[in-house]
Length: 444
Image (cartoon, rainbow, N blue to C red; front, side):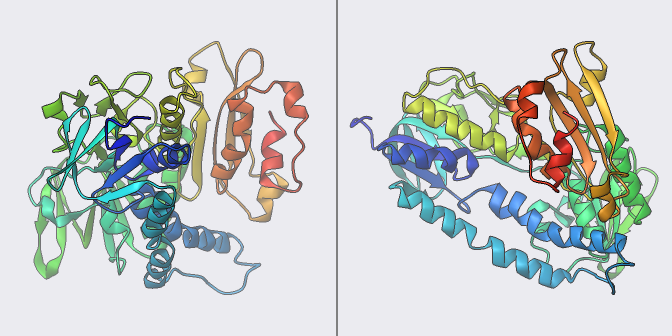
């Protein structure tokens, strides 16, 4: 701890790249400041994970009801206004709650836009704050296509606050956001067109499973246009917009630009101070340090090569707590970080991918079709597959699943991968039964 500066550590940004580590650090007696220009909590609780799941849960329920229509009487449908109202009821209080938790640990929460002045100084609204160490955790924001009529398009933040679901939604992109929001909009009754830059969706996931999701959405009426060359957007008659392609125009009521996310690196003083960065984010070493002494980066804005996901940001933030408090001097050692796309069915994965395993003699892949499993039969799941990747000592090193509960399954088997459990150790783990997790462990 130092008396030379106003703070021991000052964080720029109040998302998971900050508060999961800043609060434990403050609890250890360090003097901490957090600067936030927007909502406390960052993307995940406000415009990402939490908000998305709040809108998605009714989608899961309606899908289950359709499969059990001969068991559950009546029809279900999503009342979008009530769904959005419920989302706001759950989500809108989170910034205040998270801010309260932050301040309860003695952290000074500063509202404003921060800009680096030097490697120990940040300026917020013309006021200087100094710190022994500075952590940049400014996250990502939605990319916006630079085409004619781009002002007619909307981003993920806009979609997550839609008061009414448009009759027709056109989605540009085929990544997480595009596929998840296509699922939600379709379930809420909209006609949906997905315009893909290439011919593959969700490139980071097992393509066999991805194609099953695409086929399921197509069966529900979603239209996919491959290799769409977007020329621009235009206002047409009756206030209908159009996505202009090389060979056709797609008439629509709402354009969602889901072409990815980009780092928040502009106008925060990186060039002035000399911090290196590129389109992938701020360059850091294996201690999350930038090329400028005393300045670090954490969360989605940091270019670590790891998936830009909430669990990654949490792990990085907590690592910096250990580093700053002297609990470790080691380089950050990332564990296997799981990822999931919240379509219906979901696809979740962790560790060595199926493609990587099949292209190497170091691994074996065991694939299972679970649609005939008694537990899945209860809810009449039509799509349920899992692939396990084992090393030569039969340690589980990777897994991927497509099913209604893929996220829960992959989450349940993480200890086997993270702790590199052998066959005997796995056999010592007794699970609740009946449960979805007990089935997942039977094949390890």
